[in-house]
Structure formats: structure tokens, C-alpha cells
Length: 262
View 1: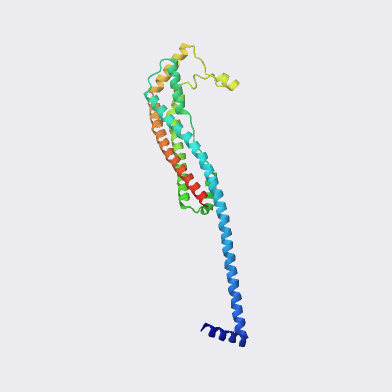
View 2: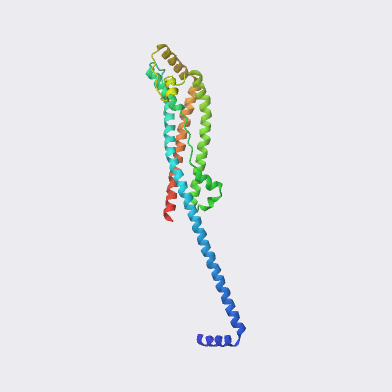
């Protein structure tokens, strides 16, 4: 049967040139369409390859930034722990009697007072979000976690500024008004030789003044309230930062997995 149909088709093609031309024309159109579709597919593959290359570049940059953040967060968390513990020790501290005890109190105060901020490395993250290239990141888990980390960074910054205002009012201002600053530092030698030297106090009268200042500061209600806020808020900041640390670690794992799979 197929043989009969083929014979009939061949005869029709020989007898009808228009039909033969039409068949050839349709065939050429089909070939052109196929060629266009192939070209479009190749172009799509090329664009996808370029997008993936750019995505991998962003992910590598993001990972590098996050690794820096992990180091800084670790230091920041340790500092907040130290501040909370030092504030609690000051709240429990008895009036110092000896110069050694005055020095211990001075050391604790500066451990609470020393101010350290956490400044995240968000160059790649900011570029991704600000440039509109976030769509290049195809992994939804990476995008969601990255945005969550960005929000946590913002929350830490807001919390730090809130704490700084409390420090200024309850701790810095009160201490500056009631207590000599850096009583055990030879300021003259520090300024002239750029070397920090502890000053040996031999004058009992000056030692007595320092003891009185310590007593007044430890009894000051505003200062004590500031220490309570410092202990509580630094503890909360440590917990918040620890959660952020874990989230950053998780994001790095997701990025590594994505980069290794492609």
C-alpha cells in the first residue's frame, strides 16, 4: 500500500509543477523555522551561561564578605560578653580600699565603657539588592537567607545606636562628672612619646581622693541603673549576634553547596 501511494505521489509531482514548488517552498520554510528555533535555543543557552557566570561571581563575593563578617561577629560577641560580665561585677563591687582595688575598678569600668561597633561587609549584598540583579540568584533559599541576614544586620545597627544613647546618659556623662578619667595613665609620656605608661601613685592624698570618687560613683543611682542596662542589653546583644552568626554560617553552607553543584 505505501508503495502504491508513493507511486501516485511521484506521478503527481511530475505532472504538476506548482504542487512540487509548493512542497519545496513549505520545506524551505520549515527548515528556516527550525534554524531560527535552533539559533534562539543557542542564544538562550549562551545567556543562561553568562547569567550563571555572573551569579557565581556574586555568590563568591558574597561568601568572601560573609567570612569577614564571621570573624568580626566573633570578636563582637566576645566583647559584648565581656561588657555584660564586667557590668555585673561592678554592681557587686564593694568600695575599693587599696590602690590595687581602685585599679581593678578602673579596669572594669573601661571594659564596660570601651565602645566597639559591628560593621558588616555588605558590598556584594548591597550591589545585588541595589542594582536589581537579585534575580540572578536562582536559589530561593540563598535569596531568602541573604535577605534575612541583611535584616539582622540592620537590627543590630539599630540596637547599637539605642545602647549608645543609654551609655551616654547613664554611664559616660555620670562617670565624667564624678570620677577622674585615666587616673593610672601617665598622660604626659603617652602624648610626648606615644607609649602608654602606667602612673605609679605614691601620694596617699591623691589615692584617698580616688577612693572617694569610686565610692561616690558606686553609690550613684544613675550610674548603677546604667550598669544594669549595660549588663542586660549587652547580654541581649550577645544573644542576637550569636543568632546572626549562625545564620551567616548557614548562608555560607548554602552558597558552597550551590557553587559545587554547578
